[in-house]
Structures are given as C-alpha cells and as structure tokens.
Length: 307
Image (cartoon, rainbow, N blue to C red; front, side, top):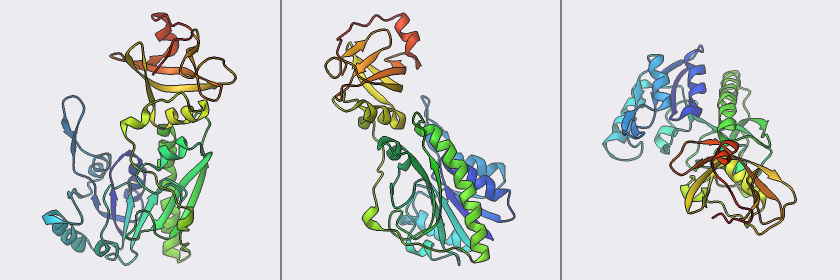
C-alpha cells in the first residue's frame, strides 16, 4: 500500500521505522513545524522528521490542516500523493473530514491507551496518575471527534508499580509498531472488525501543565507517588524549590502531613498516615541527584515543614 504517515514526537518514531522498512511505500510524512528548544532556542526537527530524513522520505510541515494557505497546500499535496491509507500517531493536529475521507482505506490512528479510556493528549501520564495497573495501544478508524472512532485492534500491557511515564512511553512506542503491523496485515486480509466505542466509559487525558506537579501532602502517599511517576513533583524546602523525580511509599509514619518524619531517609508525612521517601531530587539551582548525595551536604530537621 501507499501510505502517508503523520506523527511528531519520539513515541511515533518506531511506527515510522517499521513502515519505512516494510513492503509498504511511505510516500510522505506529515509532522509539526520545527520549533526552538533548549537554552539557545535553536530550531530542531521533530523526532519523526529526523527519522523520515534518514529514509529519504519527503517531509511536509503545515502549520494547520484546517485553515489558511497551509491547509490548502496540504490538501493539494495529499491529493497528489494519493495514499491508500493514512496512518497517524501523536501528530498533534486534528484532521478535517476531507482528509479523513481521502484515502480508500481511510485514516488509522494509534492511541496510547485502551480506548475509550484516556482520550486526549496525555494518556500515558494520566493512566499512571490514576494508579492504573494496565494500559496499551488501540488502533482506531479515525472520525471527526477526539479519539472517538471505531476501535480496530487493542494490545494490552501491565504498568509496573514503580514505572515512570518515560519508561512506559518507551514500551508503548514499540508496542504501537507491533500493533500497527498486525492492523495492516488484517486490513489487507479483510479480517479487521470495527468496534464502536462506548462513550459512557470514556475519560479525558488533557495536556499536562507545570502547576499539576505541585505536591499536596494532605493527599495519600500512594497518590503522590503516582503523580511523581507520571509528571514529577515539586515542593518548597527552606524557601527554595525542590523537584522530586522518584519516591517510595513508606507505611505507618507519625507526624503532621507535609513534615519530615525521617531525616536520614528524607521521609515526608502524607495525609493518610503513610510517608513518602524521596529517592531522586533536584534542589533549586543544582542538578538532579540521589537523595543520599543531597543529604551529605544538607542537614534536615525532624518536623521541618515542606511546601
């Protein structure tokens, strides 16, 4: 088949690599425009663009697919490419009906959740924040709504108790490529079976904001631990910002929520009477470090309050 691939970040790269090395022909890649990053604000290509260029696949980066001159050019480009199928993963733009209906086989999206749960931009982070023990990849026939199309294939994996969003992200990226391969195989054999989503079971995984990382120690320790695994956390220690990257739950500690219960292990009391032991942190103005290294040069006081 002639395929147009649409994707932008790292998680979308394994799918592109599989397609580029398969018997299918990737006639074009659509990705978000290059944007400045880092301290020097140097413009860098998206992860998908960088991978596409390795395979000499033509790359297109319209600002919009829905309005303006860019949308008109994108539509004309897609018509000229005449794909049999469009495959999408984490592209970052909503496709209009005209594009959805262009290829004979439509548009298939690979979404990093077990739909209809966690529709939206950040399904990996929200699944971990909510303490889920499993997630997966869903291949779906795209419709005009946000991740609302009929489901074609699901592949499930477990979430480790200490697994971070980045670790889960990497595993799901590989699972997406495997799921896509099986989906395309079934599509060609005519054995795909579309299953409508039950909107009553849906949930939304909106974009992550910096404010969401603030740690509220009145909450249960497990909830904060999941928050940190998903998006990291931050609090204040002696008037300075402290980022928290890794923690462990410590059962049965005493003290007021938000105070230090153990100065040698850096355990903070949480609202359910359990504690949160900081394992990896980043003090303001310093690099990320193991807590044991931080404590060699910092003396804490029992009962000292954070936040």
